[in-house]
Image (cartoon, rainbow, N blue to C red):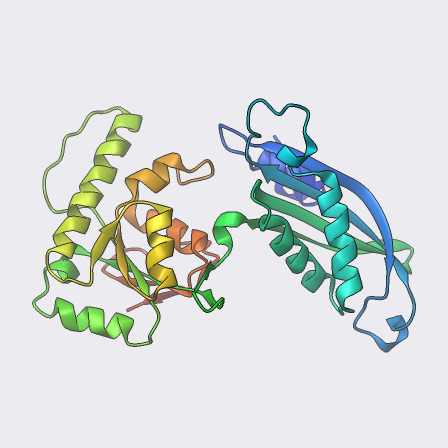
Length: 298
């Protein structure tokens, strides 16, 4: 088994393989690509070019069949090297972190790209290599509003007590008071449901039960429109509208999605996928652990 420590120092291709799901995507890689650039935050680095080493792995959608041996039907390696050259030619940057983020953003703008593993190292600072490594997913790219600005929604988890509360509209008013669209998530209803003793089928039953609760919330406030697909969520958020998430389709279709059906874990996963501003817990539930998104217990 690969340890966290050895994986941290492994090539991005090994990290990509280690974090792949049960149905891994195709990958393309760029290894040990060397360029010279004027980069660095310190005065002594200005005006002097230094060597940078790029290692990039990109998980891609399967190519259309047949490929017909046509380079225009794939994500070409040249697109990665050209993007690196373009970024370095556009403006001087101080930080490797900035360069890595911009490179990931450009790569993920390619239709085939789904996830990017990027390592950039300075080779001339000393008798060692200094570097940064990031992993970015297309799913984490914020929704773009019609104005072109990034939109970071709030993901709000509502418990059954909150759904049934007489002042539910006022509670929703408070959630939306900041002017940021919300994605409402709900838990399992307080109703009996079939127990199969079989994990895959039980998961589907639980997801459907969560969706029943989503429709119960929708019945209580007209702003709570139930949606099932990422396209519907993006469309609503882009226009500043709030929605209620019915999780089955997105969760079951996701290659790297959550494996269980715990409602709070699902809400946290969605918040990370949507690059949410925060996850708000409007329920007596355990706080999520290891979140990349700030959470607020309301």
